[in-house]
Length: 148
Image (cartoon, rainbow, N blue to C red; front, side):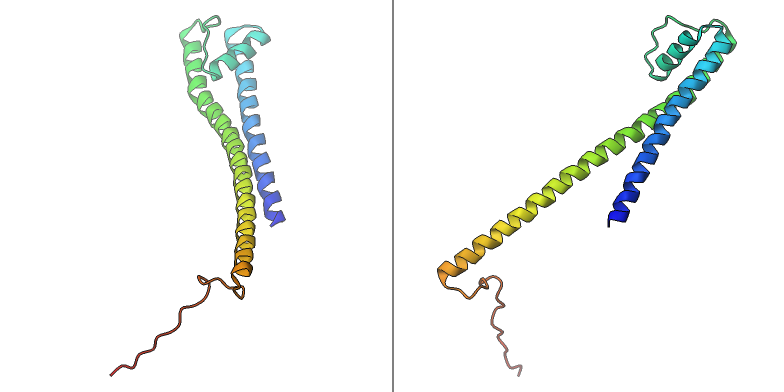
């Protein structure tokens, strides 16, 4: 069982690492592309990449030519899709981890509740003078009838 848990945790870390790497690569590619294409500083290119991928779009840095607009549009279509997918992968893993913790707490709580119920049932059996098996646990007497 622990091998499966470790493998699962390793896969989750791998997915999150890939997602973060994809986001960073998109920002890096965009920064290089816009630095070259729009002839702006590295800081402005980085800023433009982040603002564009996050779909904020302040409008303070804009493409000037039709070619720049086409390249930015393609970057938005491809980049936003990949960026949102990467964010979704991270989000899903966070939610799944939280759900696993909640499920473990519920399972532990159910086990404690079951033990309490069984202890109460044993105490009731002792007080009522039963031999340990409750009436519900006992099988009903068989009623065999002759078929004629």
